[in-house]
Amino acid sequence: MSHIPVVAAGDPHGAYAPILDFCQRQERSGILVLLGDQDLEEPLSDALEPLYANHWNVFWLLGNHDCGRNRYYDNLVGSLGLHPDGHLGGRCIEAGGLRVGGLSGIFKEKVWYPREGTEAPVYCTRADYMRQVRPPERWRATTTQPEIPELRGMPLRMRDAIFSEDLERVAAAGPCDVVVSHEAPSCHRHGFRALDLLADQVGCRLWLHGHHHRSYGDRLTLPSGREMRVVGLGIGECRRIDGEVA
Image (tube, rainbow, N blue to C red; front, side, top):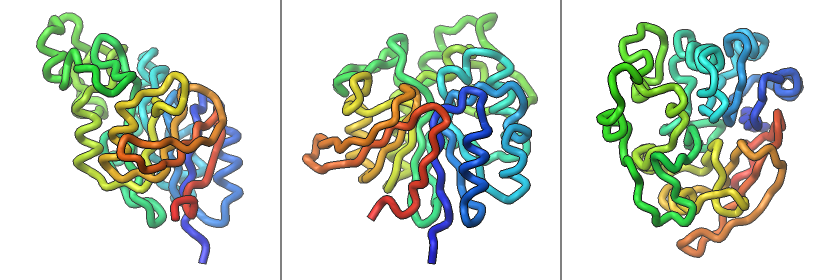
């Protein structure tokens, strides 16, 4: 019996035709995970309407571009009004027999930049960060629009920042067979060892990421000595991950 399709898609950057085509060629409806930088000029539910109409479950992560313009953010996060479970950041879901964890955003020096994995955070939590944000700089602190709760009031251009509390949330939600993220672990030349440590914590066997627009596969030796497969996806590149984790 075939697996339920579980498809990961690299940064769309506004181009959804390749993703729609890939998903519609699968043998049945399944699960789609977008790895960030959606760059939506229309609501997500409109961009992917054929998939929603055919009962695909769509999950997504925030990328840095998604927090670069009001309309990109609204067209993505506004989808929570219709699909409240869509944001995968800080969670682990059951997907086609796999436990898939998600980590939104990118590391920023103003918050935490754990290239070697040992660097102390400037701010561990968003609550810590928000204490030094003046009220006029807070964005939509009282909005009635659909929202990611932990981001309420955060300045838009900081909503893509990874805090150490985010890794803690993923670790607490684990174990995970697969982790998907926008940022890359250390096998990529711009990757971060802090993600290697997270992979060890949750028992991850396959890590997929976007952000760097490079399609590649690698094997990464984790701090525990265990090996993990890493896959980077190019712009709009789709890959089925069901059946890839033994």
